[in-house]
Image (cartoon, rainbow, N blue to C red):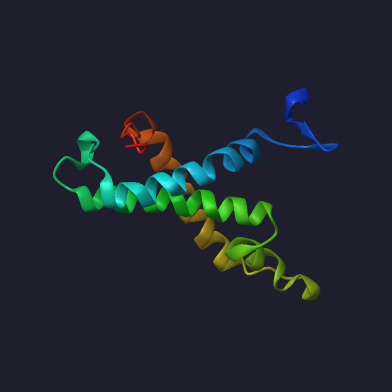
Length: 123
């Protein structure tokens, strides 16, 4: 069931919580992932002995948010997979599923490790 909240209506267009979250978090996650690769220090317990694994996890989070935002902006791989064959009444179902799998993985990692995104990237 979809609820309508006044704060989710922009320019007479209904936004979902997902839309708002993706727009607000995409650049933050992307910048944090890029910064962490060169300057990060704090590792989640699951990656205590695997800093490269944590960097890869951050990159997956970044990719998930970027794929979703690009789709919302009507560009990028996911949007193209949905629209490329539209004139023929088709979609690239395999590509869409592949990208959705990446998105689910990245967002799952984000949710799982949200409490660990504590390195101060302003230093």
